[in-house]
Every structure is written in structure tokens, then in C-alpha cells.
Image 1 (cartoon, rainbow, N blue to C red):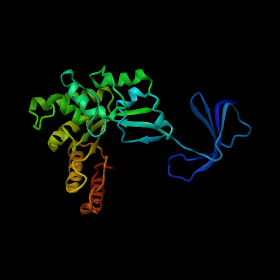
Image 2: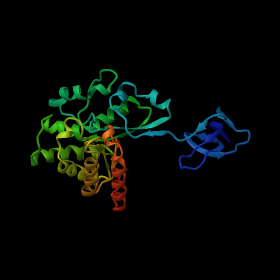
Image 3: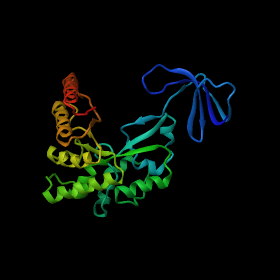
Image 4: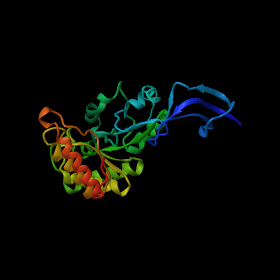
Length: 279
């Protein structure tokens, strides 16, 4: 059988935690069709990998290339590191959905993530995803909708609690984003405007995400003096919204706080025992 590509003699790591094995990999029509020792393989391209490791692409679970992908859709810097999947919309800051009346203010807030100016041609989450697809992005993209973005589109950057009507508007934007293809909701509770949100607000939005099988990923409210309380808040959101939780930055900054992660890791272990999925 003639193959399109054969990778010969590489040290294959399959991602399952088992030791690497020496093997050949044959690819046909974009699919791995043979894995093992291939005697005299015939292929359009043969890659000799005797001194190399061969493994599935890496997943960058916390990335801020939301706008950069529109400028450099091939994502060459990622691919050359073996990264083939990016999650975007982290820390509560997705670049969609946006409303025209807030867009100029919001652009100033997020364009530090872009290596060059971007022409914003979208408003809805669906339109943003279509903009990415139209560029022919070279990596897999896992988009999240940001709580800070949702809040800014309804309340601006005001330090206030939403009214019932405003909260319903926020829920609707989250639901529309989930239907469009968002994988979940992120928060940046150490940043504007997410830091103004009470726990109850986030729980209500997370409940919407849970209906669609999404997850909640949080840059928690503190990584230092109130780290324990911040992790407790993330656990509470997971429990009350019945949603999986991912803590994006779990560390104890400052000498005075060293050792607190022993407590917070135990809190997370206990939560998992109680069927709260948290990592």
C-alpha cells in the first residue's frame, strides 16, 4: 500500500502516560492508518525521525490569541512548539459578543492582546467565529465567552450590581454565545469589570452554561492573601451551578502566603470527593 506520509523510526508517545515506543507511522488522506514496524514503506513523503519524539499535538489550555489569530491565522509560533489546539476567551475577556455602543471603549481594554491593529467586523459570538473560519486558522480553537465581556456589554465598567433586567440581558448573551459554539464561561475576578461581580451573579450565568454542557474557567479573585477564600468561591460556583470548574492560576504569591496551596489543594480534593468536578 502506498501512503501519503510515513514517519519512520520515531519515539512515539501516545499521550496515555505509557513509556515511549519505537514505531513507524503511516498516514493516508489525513488519517493515521498504520502504527508499528513497516518494512520498506512506500510514501510520497518519508520523514526520518530516529532521533525525535512523535506525539499528539499539545493543547494550550490558557491562551490569549483571540485577536492575534486574525492577524496571523497560521499561528506559526504555536505550531512550531507542537501546540495544535488553543483555548481563547480566558480571564473573562473574550472579544465577542460586543455591542457597537461599547466597542471603542472595549477595544482599548483588550487590544493589548493583539500584535497589530485589528478591524472589528463582528458583534455576536457567531460572527467572531465566522471571522476566524474565514481566515483559515491553522490550529484548533476552543473558544470561551468571557464574563467580563458580557458584563461590559450590559453594565459598562461600572462598579454596580445588575438589576434583574440587566442580569437577564447578560444571561441571554451567554446563551447566544453557547449556542454559537462557546465551550464555556471564563471569569477574571482580579480584573475590571469582573472584579465588581458578586458570586451570585456568576452562579446565575454559570447555570446557563451548564445547560449546554459547558465548563467554568476562572482567573480567581485572589492569588495571595485571600487565596483560600477565592478557591472556596470557585468551588461554590461549581456546586451551585452544577458545572465543572477549572482554576486557571492556582498559586500563592508572596512569601507570607507560601504554603496556602496545601490548604486549597485539600479543598479541591474534598470537593471532588463530593462530586464537584474541579481542576
